[in-house]
Image (cartoon, rainbow over all chains, first blue to last red; front, side, top):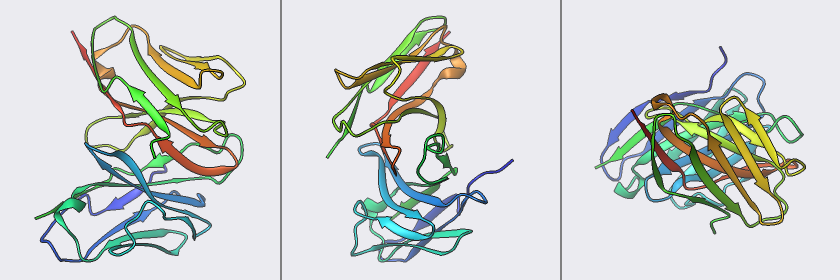
Length: 116
Length: 112
């Protein structure tokens, strides 16, 4: 049963610390998305990759956030330094790139981040 | 800029009743309109989707109604069940571009 795998599931850290979240997309998928979910903002798109190339990171605070895809099986989202306002659930989703019938996104179970 | 609006924010429906969630979009270039369902502690999962060339799509108890001229679409859940209690997100995207924009979500509670 193919699924998107995110680690860690939960992370508690102190303000100022570096946080790294990892995502393993479904094998064969070539698009990867990072979303942040909060009660106030809902699901916000942070970054989007196609074939490992970043296509859109306009939703991401550039001064502290960075997203990369070192290879096709791993996507990372880093926050350095972390702040309490970064506390949220971070979701990774993967899919197949543009074309009718390929629009479905498959979400991981998320990383619950708490910055104290 | 919020490109997809959704209402209501929360909804309580009696078991067996009809749940209705409404969404509106701004960008006329959108050509794919999915609904995602999210249970606590889980990521959103695709429930049903529609393209603007049809006005209605039905899958089991779930129906999407689409009004292209009004730029609105809605989800109807017939015979609502307690197991339908979840957060529902409408979304929109362009097939030629993968980015999916989500609405703010509706928390549905179906009470016995």
